[in-house]
Amino acid sequence: MTIVLNLFCKAFIAILDILLLDFYLKNIYHNIYQDKAQNMCYLLYTFVFIGLTLSTNIKINIIIYALTFIILTLLFHKWKVSTINFIKQISIFIIINWFIFCITTLFISWIFDTRVAINYTDFSTSHFIFVHCISKFLSYTLFSFKLKGINNLRKFKNLYILVFTYFSLTFILNNNVLFFIPTIARTYIFTVMISIIALICFDRMQTKYEKDKHLQESIIQNLEKEKEFNQQREQQQKEIRKINHNLNNILIILQSHLEKEEYEEAKNYIEQNLKTHVEAYQALTHTGIAAIDGALNAHIQSIKEKGIQYDEDISKILHLGSIVPGDLALIISLALDNAKEACENIDGEKHISLKLQSKQTHVILYIENSIPEGSHPTFHKTSKKDKIAHGFGVSSIKEMAERYHGEAKYEVKHDQVILRVVLQK
Image (cartoon, rainbow, N blue to C red; front, side):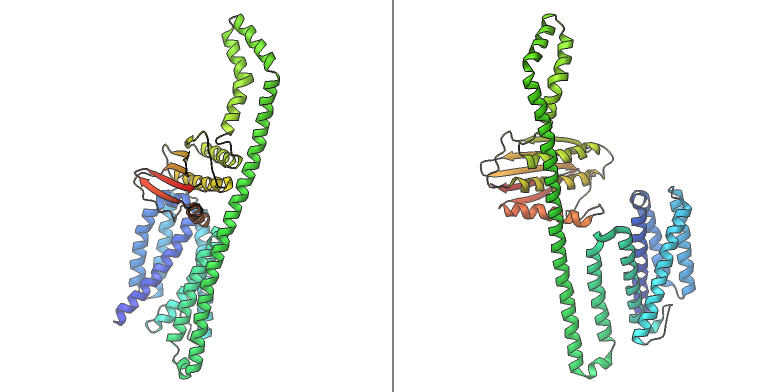
């Protein structure tokens, strides 16, 4: 039984080491890792896991780590990564990881008044796992903030709650002296429970704050888009008014070209003086509602810059009833953000289609976008760096739909995703 428990403990520690290394490489060399390295690294991790689990002393562990880093250096060199740059990044990883581990070991040994043990020993199972959990947690936290910034704050909080819980349970279960005085034991356990509950409540409040903040930022962005749209539309209207003012002269010139049978010159004159301005004005106007048109124009420009085909079908008369235009604009904006993200993972042709219908009692929005063929996306996950924003985007669309006694549903069909949002007027 002891041998099995020891193997389990070493396997757990090996998994922590592998996950930390994988997290680091995935964020330093994101594109290469996703395209080329993932499967090969997983194969290498399997051998590392077996080696570390069956290892009997620290020398074998060091040899396994050294071979792993040499193989990774050769692989990434093959994938056109600068060897010097890779060695530099791996050196940073090793130095930070081992420095934090040594400091944690000394600190925990001092707190619990135990012998300092760098290597795994059979008689210190819970203590050694605890030291590794703390050190890997601190390393992950440091790498997380260094590589991904504040967007990873929620993961940090969740891990902190887990580590704090584990620390408390380890202390309670391995400190028999604590229970010699029941009053102290009950007080300590009660304090621990209150602390854990407080941490969870703080996490919920922080999440709500982040969500509200993200929504406020989205609303401000939409207002800026609406302002920019109004300025563009005003400029186009000035051009149209200018044309109307000169319409009599324009018609005289056109008549002159036609009388002389100069049809090509007449056509060019129309394009120069009428068609360009009219088409520009029509391109700006989708619904006639500034908030929605502003959001659409900003996204359409971004969509075309990314090489994504776009088409739309919008009711000629869009009656919103009690629906606030800014809310519908925000839903469209959040949905198009997610659609663009999905299309970015496709190498071939990709498209986004938008359909906005005004029914007697409801407004219905359809957004259809391409996804990698055969994929099965989950709408609480994302590939983009700002995972918090994505998760809040999906949930915000559903919440805003429910606010108008409607619904928002995603449907996956082969190589496309269809979002259907129904809002009651």
